[in-house]
Image 1: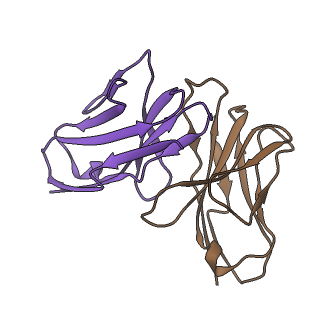
Image 2: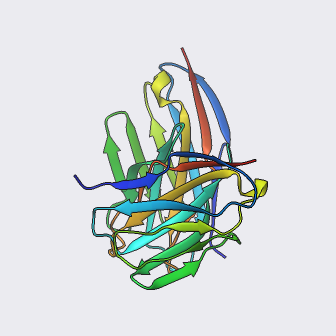
Length: 113
Length: 110
């Protein structure tokens, strides 16, 4: 079944730890995105990719990094987590056509103590 | 800079009421406008409106795009408590990225 997956769904971690949030989609989409969303607040685009080996920073500055080695996989890494990184992280994907809708993964809720 | 403004930001109604949510936008080279419903987790897709598809309907929900006024409305008739959510409007322009509004928080009371 075509879908978009994120793991872990919830993560509580201490300051200074390195973490990787996983995102995979089985729809063969070229475009993938990472958003950050605080509770009750708007979505902010932090990274996006239009294909393998292509990554760009989004509109909101983020200390995280991403990679796109395979079409279906778009992991996000924080080298040294801080309490200010506490948030929900949403991964999304979309086909190349402008008439394709954008699908969201279930999200990862990150808490940094 | 592309911009999406939604109104109202918050709305409280009773079950059975009809609501209209508004979305206005400023974007270079408009491609599409999308509506999403977000409950506790990730946004789920409702509608996509484009120059060739300016009106969509699904059950009690419907949406219209007004390209002249650079706006869209989302109508929900006979509201139910399960309609309580944040409704997000997003627009894609020449940048090929979706720009999201802040959302309208709808609360439907029994």
